[in-house]
Amino acid sequence: MTTGFTQRVTTIKGLSDRRRLPRIGRIRLGLKAVTTSGKEYPKEVEYFVVPDEVRKVYGDKPLELDVMFPLNDMGAVFPVAYKSYGSGKGLRCTGDGETAHRVNETTKEMEQIKCPCNLLEEKKCKQTGTLMVMLPKVSVGGIYQCTTSSINSIIDIASCLDYVSALIGRFAMVPLKLRRVKTETHHDDKKQNHYTLQVIFDGDINTINALRGDTLRVLEHPRFQLPAPLDENPELDAIDIVADEENEKTVEPAVIPTPVAAAPEPKEKKEKKATGRDLGMAIKCPDKDGKIRPKGDCACCEKYDGCPAWE
Image (tube, rainbow, N blue to C red; front, side, top):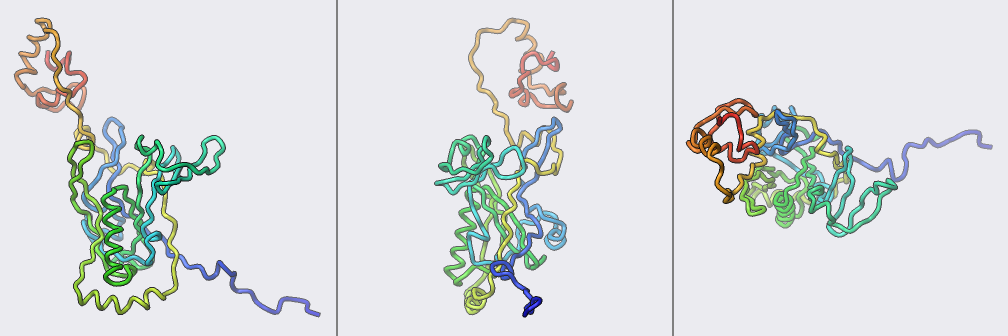
């Protein structure tokens, strides 16, 4: 009669064979700024905002990073989805352009809805791509996450990975460059410059042939899982910088109203304008920072008429 266990259990099927790489850092594409009046807004920059260990290798404001993808799976290394956040930290809704899953505010349960919905038009939802890369010149012990909501970046990254796969038979473990590229965009009849992401293969035919020869070994290597994308509401990020009111205007330009014909003004007001505003004299603004400001800055101020600085 057996009185105890004779075999030592050392594995669990479906669990012990799973392997996962850790997330060791984040790469950001901008800063979170706050004006002196307390208004928060995202401030795009032309360089990568990187952790200290990356800064030691590439400097404070790198425009290019050496990257590799640990897996040959587009959905794992660059998942893309429509994402919307609520007032809390986590996701409220995520979708693929046809269907989405959203938390019902009443029942607190997940429900399936049509995608996209009104949240996209209200700019409460964005297309979001999450790039999961290794930085071999910094560390090969895990992955760095970089998130973008730029349509141009999403298309360019996916295009490069498909192109490299066509050349070599894979994009996993291929040395690539991740770059910030100045791109002119047009939205609502406005021309703007943004700094989009591009993944570049910077190799010649000899490099391609050498990498092709190693493709079978790379693809046969045991598959490692990646951590799920860190989906946190960017509105809850800590403030990076304090910017003045002028910096805020560069992000959200004020619209100067078109003059509208009106009835003749009383003689007193015409005399006030003739002594200051109409002559283009510089003045000190009493309601902002007290700096000397040119006449043109007053044209978009709600206190254009009756400002004590012009009396």
